[in-house]
Image 1 (cartoon, rainbow over the protein chains, first blue to last red):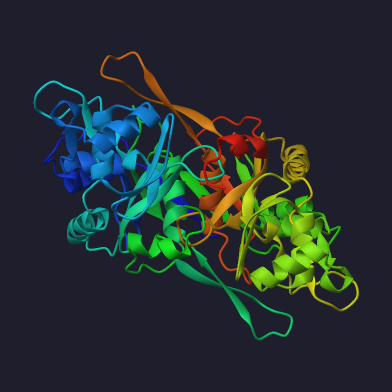
Image 2 (tube, rainbow over the protein chains, first blue to last red; image 1 turned 135 degrees about the vertical axis):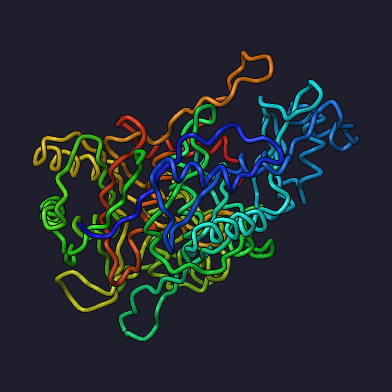
Length: 256
Length: 256
């Protein structure tokens, strides 16, 4: 049988709390699943477990909305305290209509609500309405996890942190890369030469986003989902990709 | 080891010509790869092989550009004959700037150049500059292939036709669904209940696009690529999805 790509969701990752040793929890889950890490393997993590381990919780009761947040909350019919947090996490507001608040996240990508999720599993702390922000620097989070897993396994690995985003033009969310370490973000594919045979069309393929979508498919439901997916057979050499490689510069973006 | 998703690119699909029995070529490739189709398997095809089998070639020398095509060609620095074909395949032009022509394809999705590719492998016919259009009705193409493969195998299958598209806001192309049969396009995932425990956030996940991205990752280079990928372990029940399910209605689209 020819060589393929295998994505294995890891069962048994417990509810992650701030300060938990996420790297260690994943190593335990890998052992239980009978998977020994090999050179070229990639581990893909849902943003939520990374954010929880990093303690990226905020309590709405502690937030004082600015006048701008109050105005946007009226326009979008959203909680002004949530909108305040969205603004704090954003570089620009792209669209604000009833039910929809789309921003450029401070990390550079475009998404709804700055990727902030309601959380029904609050951290240790006072009662209240808790939300979960994205990791502060997902590339750095991925790099730290990679270092821990490479140390533990002796294998050369890639690490990818993903979140589900909506898209312009198409319905439904898909998994997209928000942080990575050890694998390429973009790969140049040389197309066919033209009829004269001398001009190669070069296409850049967002392989990190393609892998993010693939892994996301296997993460399943939020409630009983599996937030970590082991990947074997990634078809490109490992390389030092970064989130910034995937972001269209504002001045080359026709759809803001 | 827990149940995972396996994507296997099928080697040995020859250059496809108009009128070729694509279903039969894939069955031969499956046999050579030692893969027996099972209930729930999905076959993913690059648009190019489907279009070639369906003879969706056009020769630029046979195209007379309209005044509108000539004007857009000046604006985009593209061949006016190519632009004429793009317009014939499109419902609306979204953006036209030097080097870039983004349209709503007549099939409803947004993409560059209406998905028309230069082709360096012309069909039987006169010399000239040939291009390849998307299949006329990719959902119908997928349904025909599915029927043939289900007949041959006795298994219940999904079929997905994919193309690589650019995105707003992000660099690089990713594989996206342009036609499907036998698998869902969108799946409702119930999120966690809110703190009061009674409101479930429902998210629609574009699982067909996630699978399209996954398979596209394994199709590799245009020149020596493998345009058909066998998928085992798709994590949702087969269902009657269609391209239209993935398309955001114009009136709900904030980014045109």
